[in-house]
Image (tube, rainbow over all chains, first blue to last red; front, top):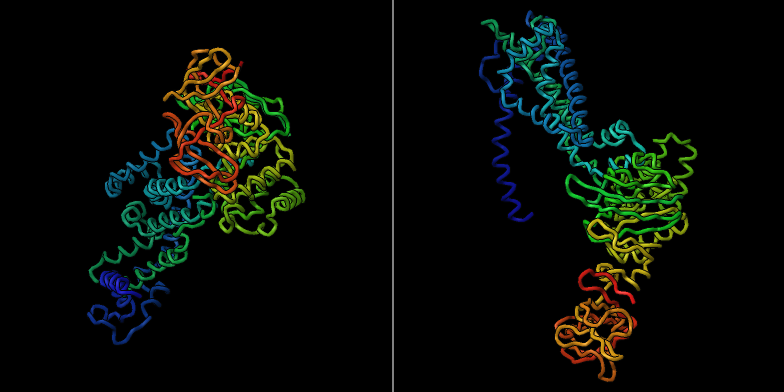
Length: 280
Length: 357
């Protein structure tokens, strides 16, 4: 290792270590609360005197009135997030294929119009969206949240997938066409397999967007049996004597699935599958 | 196997017309090369035959059936692309089998055809590999294998060798020619490389600016180019062309070029006083041993081993001379060039058309 490399690494560490501490500090506190007994939770110690897993037991057994529906709400979050991920993928993949590969007339304009909606912050659209769902008569129905989140996730997803599609060599489509593939076969047998890394990335994006959503979930769903875990966490703060240790424990559990999903699909986020298709 | 017929083909992209009424026929089993500089419309013509490009007007027929409105997949053609266009997520075997699978062919037949094609192309050891694990030449062979298994009526090649290095290109050239001699499938081959055209074609179609300049066998084009464009496009190094005026007096004739240079002519075409382009191939110029002939001065000597090329200043023009062996000459040396008038090509200076007696 030469001197220049050492200095470069040192500089990177100089930036990296503060960033790491900055990011990990809240998570550390989350963990600290979760393993502290109730009376020590707000003690301000760096490590509890008697670390305990009792809080986890309470959450798992739904042994608190804020946690009566913990498992159901976790399930709600999961179902909604997966549904949003899948539906967004279906719409965005179809749109990207049509715009980028089939070159449907007006496709680009449709995509740009969809992207234009991002000029209006999602928070401003919350009330109109609430009214719209009311008109459809699906307020307090999980479909309202799913559809709202799909609406928010789709434009960006189309754009990302369209960019990725554009990078696939057009000769592949022509070769498939001459080989006798119909557009649907081209989509299924050539396009989808090659787009897999981007599809996983976009699906994960939409899934996590829905998993982390609070505002829309809070507005569109009200029954304790319908709400997502994120909204349930917010409800902890409704009282003056919030059980902080339980809130943090639940929060920690709430953060685990996204972490797992991200970790699982990490390798798909990197491309490389198209190597060897054409000489570049 | 099949014949192909182009009739009054025109093609426009928007308001830009790129092909202006092209018509010619390809007979069954023929290897035809479309050649021309980039932008001449050769690839567009091939893509229209493939069904990848709409035909603005005119008709294309394969085996007598007009295919203008027939989908690519139903034209019974196979195409090899410049970029190979292999499916990166499929193995070599799957790449070759893809078209037959789409046609729902019997798996036994598919396996048989793939195995036959891979034997012809020496791809047997690579059937389970992915395109990214192959070299350029191997990928090119897979692309050809994918065409062969189809057993199509017509093979289409779109600059298939352009991405290969020079040595591999020569080897693949021979391979494609051998393949054609073996399968005898009608083939249309597009290239910008006149050497490829000369070495591979049964017949060459020289295109320029969306028009056909000349059609003929390689040697016909070489020996009797129909116009100045073909004369200068076919052959390497290119034909020497000097401009001048025909002078005929008594029995003698010559072309009077800039700088009072007299290029010899025989009793062939060219009327007295006519402005012409005088063409002579480098190998038809020789160094005169006895001081007679067209005077010039050597600029550069380029030995290539078997042959030597000399760049020579004659009057205000520079000409190339190619000779077997290794003449003992040096730059700035004064020389005289001997020309056999029988090897001279005369073209009208205005139209560029070949003058015939």
